[in-house]
Image (tube, rainbow, N blue to C red; front, side, top):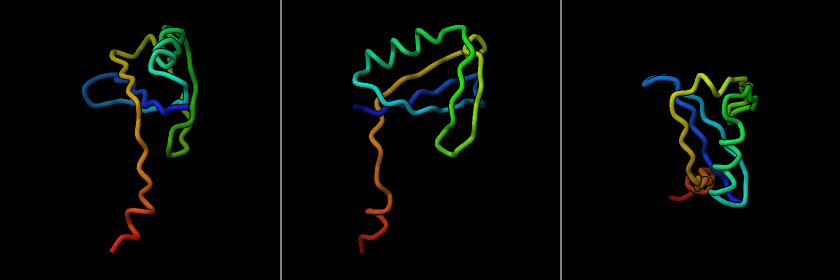
Length: 77
């Protein structure tokens, strides 16, 4: 499984980010396309619950995400 970052932009300043686990970029794109003009709900990485109508989104970006383990980085001298 790969992790993908999905960013929903409403305007130049306001966006919501969501992370999904799927097998491929194509599968991620298919999911986003299947959700077009629908209400979706999810909890973001901060634990905040969101419901949004994708009809109100101006731009959606999908990209593979490489999560960095920050706890290992902090332990280095």
